[in-house]
Image 1 (cartoon, rainbow, N blue to C red):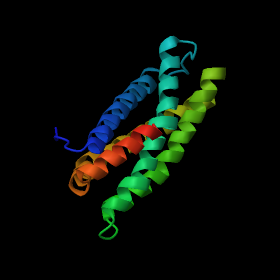
Image 2 (image 1 turned 45 degrees about the vertical axis):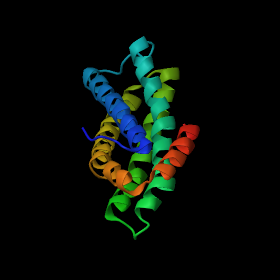
Image 3 (image 1 turned 180 degrees about the horizontal axis):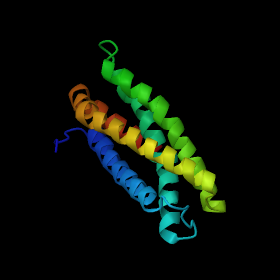
Image 4 (image 1 turned 30 degrees about the horizontal axis):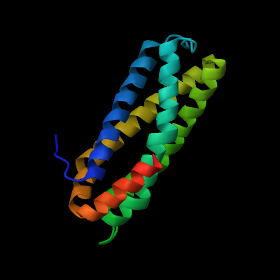
Length: 167
């Protein structure tokens, strides 16, 4: 594991790991319930749907916004980089899929899953998990190291403070 000398890098890495764990739970949940829609009154199902909705609405949305507003522009100061372009493009695909999953999950917590909503949840959920996991892998391999190299201590402190306040 890479040693993180910047707080922003450490926070982003920790968020990545928490989201990966949630996506793994989502994949296991879908795999274990493929045959029929699960009972959303089941406490474990309700907790997963709640955690998924909260993560998409909070951590993932805020994480993307922070990267786009604060990190990517700093990385592109010497000219646009291919890395930030790819990551931005992926945000544009992942965010709407996440919004749809959160929408289905919220409705299911209230009304349960229909056959159709469960099929859509499975299909969209697995696609979302695959895309976001791949995206996180890219960020872990490239973005985190780049952040370490472009942020000085003062900027790191200021960004950490503003990011913590937005979460």
